[in-house]
Image (tube, rainbow, N blue to C red; front, side, top):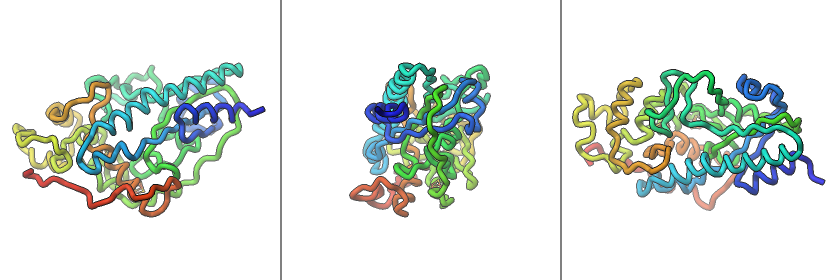
Length: 311
Ligand code: SF4
Ligand code: SF4
């Protein structure tokens, strides 16, 4: 007879999870765990790999939508919620309560924050009644992986290439250990790779800067940018090179002009950078031989492409 933990892991893996970790709720630093469920005993972290193939088109400069659709939205909106629901059913069948917690890309705790993955106009900001887990902190506390310099969670299996969600439950389930950080060596590749210089050397992210360059404000990495882009901006060349630090007002103005790639008909913005920070990190970790999941060839197969400013 399998244990509750084994049954949950087995079901989650059948439903698309690649990594499942269990953490004792008391060890979670995020107060929201107990605000959301005061009787919580265990937090289950469910991670699904982001196929590295969904980045191939952006790596080669040939096709872009796979990253946003299959690599991001399908995982967040279909695979993970489905897997969470099925795991919660097992917990309910065993008599426990279970709260599925997936990211809500549209809710920001801070008044002037944003999320590059969705339109800034649709985001609800500063809604203190809408509690959302600190996903990165909870992933660390659940034992999924470690936090890299630029904030992404790194695992030995997939580096920064996974998306994850949680189940909070009052079932007491044997916890997994927290991961001892060893992958991030502070190489700075994530910082260098950002086409908008949105990450400071210490890893701090300018979220508005990220939002503008995530959707393609850098001309050298955006093959869809027409020659007239940003024509009324006095510092257009610096914008197109990612050299202007944008505040929220300026970023909004720039984002509104980055409309030359057909938007995907979903809730998520089309990503042109394809999270270049994560890609650079993955390339670095793969080169170092730090990842368990091996491929017959390395992800980066030729020198990184860049368009010249006049192209
Ligand atoms: S690219 Fe280097 S510094 Fe950045 S998170 Fe990865 S290992 Fe750490
Ligand atoms: S590489 Fe892309 S996702 Fe990463 S910080 Fe820069 S703009 Fe944002």
